[in-house]
Image 1: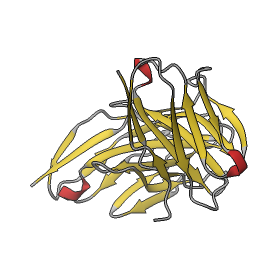
Image 2: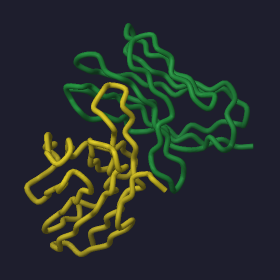
Image 3: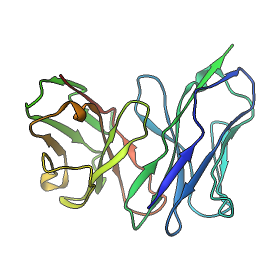
Image 4: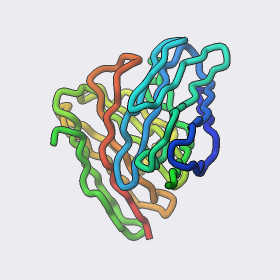
Length: 112
Length: 115
């Protein structure tokens, strides 16, 4: 079956530090890959996506590249801000599965 | 606000009681999903609808759970004879289509606490 593995949190960084949150997946077929973000007290929001191998998704300074050879979709940001503090979820979608399969989430805390 | 809405936002109930949650998707969206999220975990799929047809149910959805989407608009999720293990956040999402890149838009969730 499909599964997503994320690095465990919490991840604590100083403002302007470089961020990497690792995500690897197992899937049948050719999944689409997503990063969702959940800010404190708010619902899940799509951060970025990639639908085929070697695609790069980007939004709000965050980037992730769909690497089929390593079955990975790591999230990166060059300079984090306090406002980036949230829980980040990696997820995949396959047409055959008709649903999103999520990782367990990684909490990011950014301090001044 | 034209996003996905859910009602109620919070529900506290006693074990053995029945509860019903409502989800109003974005108006033109054909697909509607229900997920459950427990503390420290990612959302887990429960079921989904294509218009009014319920097309898939997870093994997580025991026979105490039932979901409907009459007329392909809003959806309800009912849990009968609640158990403490049902305590979770219940999330609803909708999408315009079923393609690989179609974004699922999530509602704020209904937090259920079973005492």
